[in-house]
Image 1 (cartoon, helix red, strand yellow):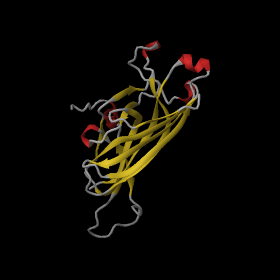
Image 2 (cartoon, rainbow, N blue to C red):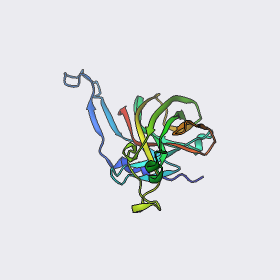
Image 3 (cartoon, rainbow, N blue to C red):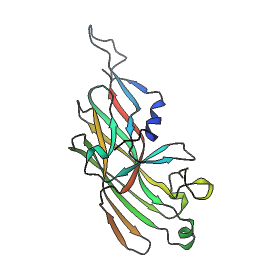
Image 4 (tube, rainbow, N blue to C red):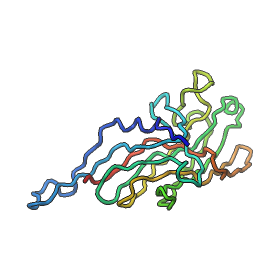
Length: 213
């Protein structure tokens, strides 16, 4: 399967922030190497790009339910010393309908669970986002490239949870895969999605914090 490199990789154009290590203002010991903490956009290889936000200009990447790590989102970590911290915005994924909003039938409550794992499939962390949709103000942004009014897609990110995941030293890449999606609709019907290949959440604004070599 060819993995698209569009979308979140565009975030890597931003300049990294360099934070002096604690005590950096004090005189260094002879022979001691200066250490800095770097915070920068991280390379994200996105198999299914949702699109770019028309207001924020932020690329959004779909999270798919996958059991095969090679088919999931891949995050490539920079060379570093020790542990790193990966962070990203985790969103639910809503199909917007103006007709349903006007009819009062648009309400949906989402709970999405994703896993961050090593390239071999060992899970490092599970993270969650819970959000409710009632009207367009509950969307994070609209996404261009669709067939709807003004060229907008019906699918859009809704809700946001900033998540942080510690990455052990020596791990050069991790994957992000969907685990399950729970939905509660306006008529109180419930549904759960666990089908492999289903798009069930969205990520954006991925950063990595680490100590440079």
